[in-house]
Amino acid sequence: VTRHSHPQELQIYCRDCRGPCVNLHFLSGECVLFPNVQGGRIFTCQPKNAADESACAKTIVSTLARRAYRRPVTPAEVEAKVALFKRVRSDKPTFLEAIKIPLAAILASPHFLYLVEPERTTGSSEQLNGYELASRLSYFLWSTAPDEELLSLAGKGELSKPDVLRAQTERLLKHANA
Image 1 (cartoon, one colour):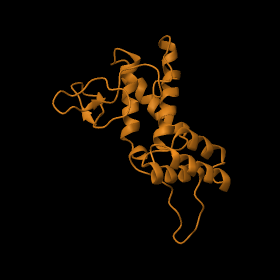
Image 2 (cartoon, rainbow, N blue to C red):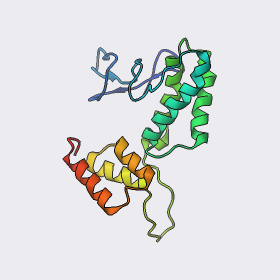
Image 3 (cartoon, rainbow, N blue to C red):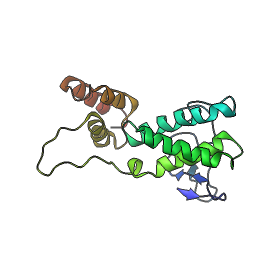
Image 4 (cartoon, one colour):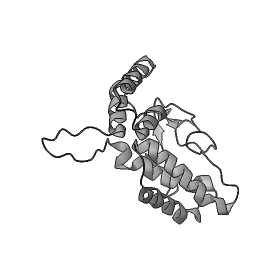
């Protein structure tokens, strides 16, 4: 994550990126990964007017945070990021410029950067919840976060069923990411 010319503006640079590059850094060939594009998996809505912006920001934040944190997000987590959006909105010329700030906060969060799991009692053999199982399986077989199918099954409580777990393991192993 690199601070850019504007004090509150962040851009994400990486090598070997997957996804659309807005431009390439002319010296290093790094891809600017935080695209200024509409639609897709991040910008899931576009407000039609100023009155729609908070609701759209909430949708975008909750969708990205769920994927980034690999678990359901709490209303307090979403509201904190929407409040950040509202604080910076008056300083930004467009909705897209303002929504980048809470999205960057999500991507800088320990819940995204690290695999955070609840503390367990020493010596206990508690079963993993569906989201923990999805994350462990995906990181073990793909070295990346769980996809939507794993997260959906985790949310429904299906992933811990032996036949579903076996089928998902086989699906992940057959995928190019394995």
